[in-house]
Image (tube, rainbow, N blue to C red; front, side, top):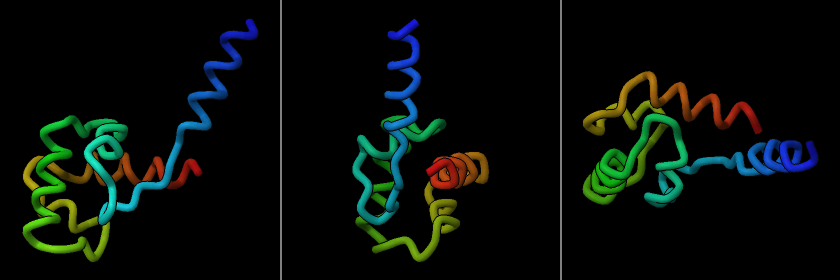
Length: 79
């Protein structure tokens, strides 16, 4: 029982705020629905076009839509 509680607490502690303008590939892949390729696409877009003005600007990246935007918002709200 103690192991289960520890794992649950460790999972809760791992939540983090995501700054889409400084996040690394490793940061992005922690978000449900973002794998390595999408993370790479986000970073490549950011490098080519500059900082994102808002979270909604992520939709300009191929493969990023409302579902992922909502997942990021949910992560931020959980903090």
